[in-house]
Amino acid sequence: MKNIPAIAPALTAEQFRFVASVAHKEAGLVLVESKSSMIAARLSKRTKELKLPNLESYFKLLESEDGRNETIHLLSALTTNVSHFFREEHHFQTLADEIIPELKKKLESGTSVRIWSAGCSTGQEIYSIAITLHENLPNLQNYDLKLLATDIDPQVIEFAMQGVYSERQVSSIPKNILSKYFIQTEDGQMRLSREIMNHVTFRRLNLLSEWPMKSNFDAIFCRNVVIYFDEKTQNDLWGRFTKILKKDGWLFIGHSERIQEPGSYSLKTAGITTYRKL
Image (tube, rainbow, N blue to C red; front, side, top):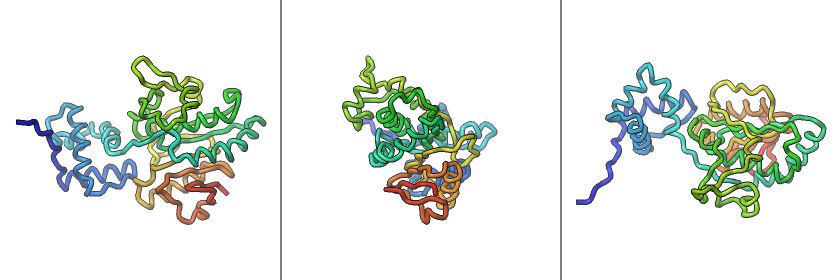
């Protein structure tokens, strides 16, 4: 008789409401009940990692005094981290053709430049930004330029900080760029060069919490992140991003995201899912 894979038990209505409430309160995530089976499967995996007997025991943990520490892992299980290098290539073309010439003038005059990847996932976005800068700004290490990458999920940050990717994960990188900035490891993985990684600082950050950054940014990439938020949370974020952008700063969002009435946030459309601060 063939072994039939075990099917994760479904969430009860009460369990789904609890998870949805925590996800929205802590991270602004909006969960729909049609995804209950998928959520159950992900939480069942976390339950096994903790060596707990069943989902019911996992929910007891969440509701206990130790549950606060587990909330971070709950959110990690609920979020989808899909990324690849130079995703939505038109944004990187805008960075190379329009933004970098402006940044070069600033840097050469001694002005600092700051770029933020908000919701950096496994690192491909911020490293694509760093590579684009390196390709178009000689002697990049001599300038006051810093790149910040943040995500709510500590596991993907840990992965990103290693700078090691599979051949499949680097398949979207042009061969000349791949050979220039990556080294193949003994086990066939591709390791990013230190000259690129040194420009990036990774931090865990919940976008709904207070932001500790002191400096304003020349560009913010927050792509395919707010699609998981409700409309009010999205609108609040647009305002917060604008506030921390420098005048004429750039904001990039995901291909399925839009800012309704950008002028109300002191933004103007500057390309496909691309905005500038007025």
